[in-house]
Image (cartoon, rainbow, N blue to C red):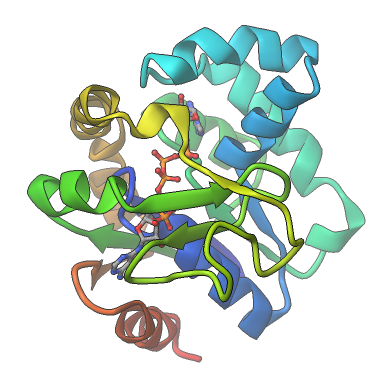
Length: 210
Ligand code: AP5
């Protein structure tokens, strides 16, 4: 199963990718997490990406295409994978198709901007493993501590309200046209994102036919 989770920032892609990944036993590839890790480690890719991410802009396509091509070639992707947050532009989608990477399903998690702006203020992420929580919708067992690795939870720099507004603008201009791209390929399914996490998971699994 090769799957893409599409959706606005904060739609729940990362949250759902984690759950579906466990259920289907396939890895999740999150370009956002890979880039944040690169920034933390001070790599060349991280240095290139940082100013774009802090401003809520997209990282250049060539950087992203390089990251994804390298990652999907790893042995753990042999039986499939979930792309979370990529592709995000038509050139990224075209590059995947040109590389012979075709998708069984593309799930677009649908949600209004106003809901997202409110939701982002409650997000907390693990500064170490990248796991994502919400102070009310998906709280950790111990406040401020990651369930998965026990490290401290932090607020993402790009979750500042002004940056979220900019990310939403970029999403509508650059990423939303991908729905049309994948609809033409006959693999697009829409799922409501403004519902409890478990209900959205059920709808995604139904859309996948599993
Ligand atoms: P990235 O990390 O991919 O961020 P994003 O797409 O903006 O998505 P988010 O991680 O903000 O949201 P999400 O949909 O995963 O939601 P989550 O599950 O966390 O990218 C960051 C930056 O990296 C980009 O701005 C760009 O600069 C760069 N980048 C990355 N990929 C790129 C690419 N391909 N091309 C170019 N640049 C790229 O949920 C959000 C919150 O809501 C959490 O607190 C969660 O607990 C909560 N929540 C989730 N579901 C629900 C629900 N159903 N009800 C209530 N709360 C919920």
